[in-house]
Image (cartoon, rainbow, N blue to C red; front, side, top):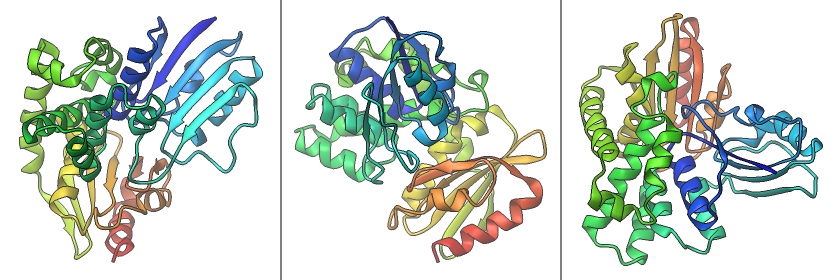
Length: 320
């Protein structure tokens, strides 16, 4: 029976799959893409039974494809922390670990499932998903030093950074290739100590893009929101998500958004709920076409230019 590993191209999706495949190696076909490419299950052929693992993409956005896979006799193992829809599939060949609490992520669910066998990868993912308080607590409980904790945080943020772009052409590495490079290490601290070329390249790219992002102009600011605008450039698309996390960390009582220009007179929007109120990001963006995500972090794939003022007004009021 053919195996398929379907996973989000961000830190959480990659680190979740690393843990699973370190625990149970398998020669699976990898299906992934940029972070916002979440309708991934449709790329799995539903013509014959297969074993399918799906990580860190919303079941709500993949439900039709999953139902087709189940109807074809495939077994589906689904792990995620996004909105799954109103009801899970009722099928004996469907197994799910889904928790939408804003203080968890897919890699932490996998970590619990594997009873902590590759715990440092889960800590890395928590930092990559901007669960900094959770990551720091897990690292402290694991006995990691402040230097080790900071190293895992940097790694997680950089893996997450690599997932952002309009297409894989914007990225430093295709997420599948980055997974293949990093799954060679059972402990991410060994990866950092060894410092392979892929890690060096990714870290330098992050530092350069982040410097430009932090210098970007503020489009709008209120007592409860901060919105920054980025140009239609590859570096902008790469840095938008991690810049949103950084702005949220620096402004814990404000909802933060990154507005990135697109060539079709629309905008790519990345939203972070205030760290002091880790809820509502998904509710906010779903008021606009192509909006989706989770409670603490969400986005709009294509915000029409004529709706920009409406978005700015909405986010200014939403957490006030």
